[in-house]
Image (cartoon, rainbow, N blue to C red; front, side):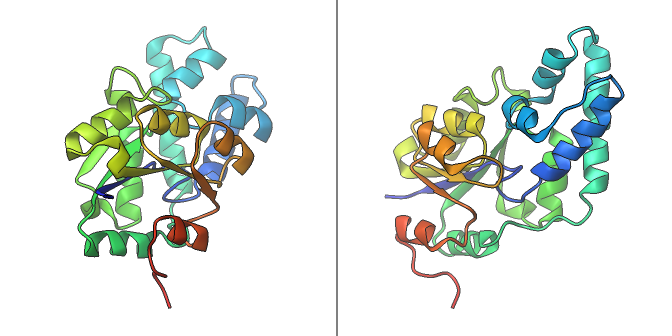
Length: 220
């Protein structure tokens, strides 16, 4: 019996990756680094900021790496002033409320970004549980963030469904024993299937998702 939905944030509730990419590209150019979309997908998507910065700019001190991360995310929030939910998301959330499903956000996003996105999408009150990877001992792709979410909700993995757009997120959710739907906003469906996604769709309005969840059409 289905008891809970667990959602990633960036690239899942909203298609934010193009703005993240452009912001990182502009910031890293100051350090003599020029990235392209292929490099971005391979080295950035779904990872914690400090991991990214330490890999690309190992000479930076921790304080300077944290300052760069904070500056990058502040600029992202400025550029992301008009945030729109992915198609079908609000209908799915309404259905969840009607059927009293538990729900959680599980993200590697910094706390300020998570709060900004949930508030901008006007769904903050719908998610009493928000698990932040950077506040745990290990973030995605480790299963820990999803394991913590399941524990807080009091739900077993096989009674939940996770929604993820990144390889690291899919690995994290699958590693926690949760059937996972890949949202193909940032990566090819074939890749998400290869690392364990049960179903891959472009957004929440795809009728294949409704059929897989055995939900009647949410909109007429």
